[in-house]
Length: 296
Image (tube, rainbow, N blue to C red; front, side, top):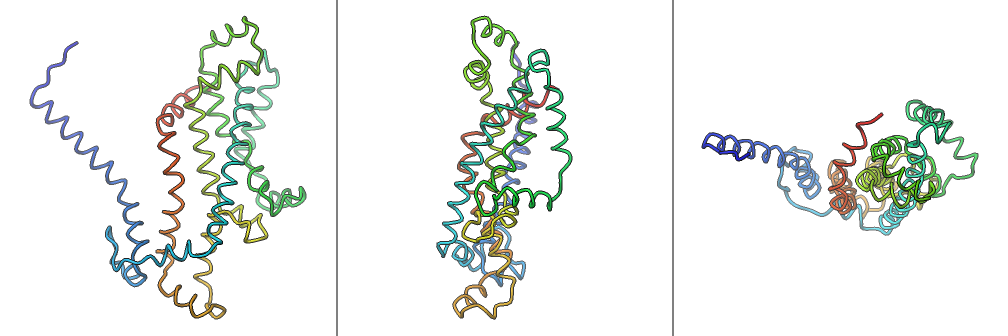
């Protein structure tokens, strides 16, 4: 059907596009504000003078973050954690979701395992039992303490499971008639057809591992093994502590800083890897979330 546009329709369309564009650009304002704060000096930030343009620009906040080799060591720990933890979650999420997507006639204990996973998502044993478990397993101060507790993310499993269940059953039946076993069907059929949902849960995994800081503080005894977020958090703590034990150069450096400037630098540094990865996964993100959330 051919649709004729009147002048009124065109004006309405232009107004809608303008409003949506303004709303879209407004979402960038907090990021611009944080960027301006990170480049402004301590006095300007404390006086509330900074909006979207840096006042008396300085790199003091970024120098505090990247001036010593501890930053790059922590960055390397976070990269290792993302690669190891993300890869482990990728494999275990696919294996678990595929098994749970099978009908009860094929996997009789499916509902039992499903309820166990749901229970762990709703209820937690608590922080102290969690710490004691990691300690008793002799995982403290190791990379495995950061990646094993979240190796099977239940929410990601449910999203991917629903996506698997939404695929046409005829494809699975045709592969079964051709003699394909469960492993072959999963690798050659389900995984390639589920790239949108897999990309979605992979993005969740990468962001979760990259942004986590508390478990590093709790489970790492040595500061040399802190991930990046834990290291950056400790910068804020040290800046708020008494300065009697600091050298004159360190006192001079901290005098140029405030919690707001360092926090802003921390946020921006933390965003860089995610901003690099996200464009490659963005086209799958909305599709994966939509198709993976409509079935039971």
